[in-house]
Amino acid sequence: MSLHTPSLIAAVHDRSARELPPRAFAPRRLILATGAALAASLIGVLAIRALAVSGASNTSRFSPLGPTSVISLTVVAVLLASATCLWLNRTSDRPLATFRSVALAALPISFIPDAAIWLTAHYPQTRAATVLPLMAMHVLVAIVCLVALPRLGQAAAQLEPPDPPRARSH
Image 1 (cartoon, rainbow, N blue to C red):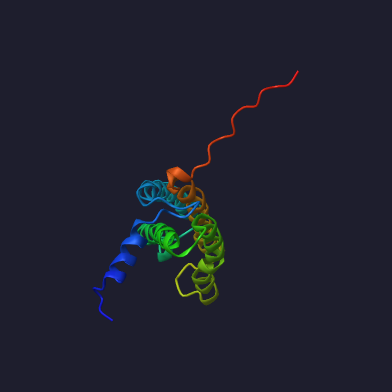
Image 2 (tube, rainbow, N blue to C red):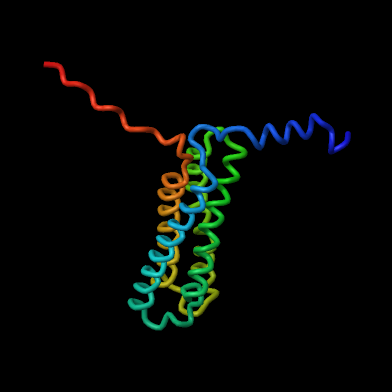
């Protein structure tokens, strides 16, 4: 079978020209939603980091709380969430609802590296005061992505208008 057959080309064009499924992400709106989620997440995780570093004694040797680590992993997490939204647009009939389910399932899984750090004490200064803020950062980024990406990244045509006011009966 040739890759240039008219039926294959037609199938590709039909798939690319199809409308977004109901309750889908709009790729262009998702760019802005990703920026908003990234900004909010970075502000939040840097605030958690500041509290953790100021409250715990001698956390400078605990590298997972270092600014480079916190910022880079937050960027990766938000971009991964956004990429998941785009992937779900292509693979799911209900991308918004599926994203919420996937994100909620991924959150406990994201705690595994933090728990491993805590259990193995691989880094100097590993204790509750340094590991629990990392877990709080996971929760914060998850909440931001669960709210911002579906709300701001939803296809405009799919936004539900408010119900019109009803006339009062006397």
